[in-house]
Image 1: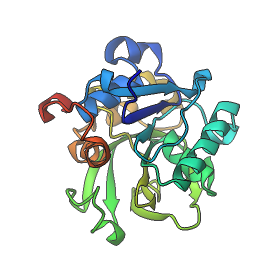
Image 2: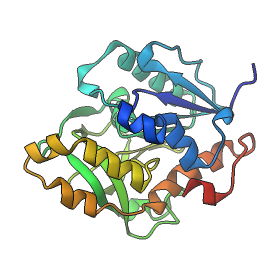
Image 3: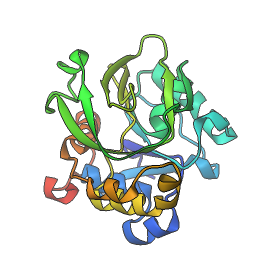
Image 4: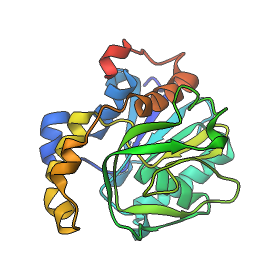
Length: 251
C-alpha cells in the first residue's frame, strides 16, 4: 500500500447530525485543505487504531474531539507518547483544538477546564509580535476571525513553546513548539455552515451557561485567514505528494 505524505490523526467523531450533513471530521479537513480523501491516511486513534512510527518525511494533523484531554483516556495518552516521539525527530505536526491541547500536554504543559467556561462561535484572534515573521502567519492581518468551540484550555505552556496569538477569552490561540510543530485552539477546518450547525446543536448547553446562542449564530462569519494557516502548513510540508485541488474547492 502506498504511504501517504499526510496523516490525519482522528481523535473523535462528529455527532451524527453533523456527519449526516457535512461528513465526518477528516472530510472537513480534506475540504479545507483542498485535497482528495484518497491523498491522506486517516488513523482513528479513539477507536484503537495504531499510529505508524513517526516519520520526518510525513506530516500529521491532530484533530478536534468531543473528549477531554484531562480525562487521560488510554488512547489519548498513547497518542501523547507518539507526539513526543514525533517532535523528537522533527516530524511536522499541526494540532487543532483537542489536538492543540494534547500537543501542549504531551510536551510538558498543562490542560484544564477554562475558568471562564466555553468559547464558541466566530471570535477574533489577535496575533502578537512574535507572529510577524512566522511563515504560517505572514498572510494574516493583526486580527482575523476564527471558528471556536472548546471548554478546556492550555493553562501552562511546555518549556520552549511560544505563543503567537490569543483571543479575549483564551491566551493560547496559536502555539509554536519548534520549526515544524504548531497548534491552534480554533478550528481552521470548519466552514461557516459547520460552525453554525454546531452552535445550533449545542444550543441547550450554551444557553444553560448564560450565553445567547442566537447571537452567536448571527455572528458566524467566513474565516478564510484561519483556513489558510492549515493550507500553508500542508503546502509547505507535503505539496510535492498531495494532489491539491483549486483553492475554490476549499472555500
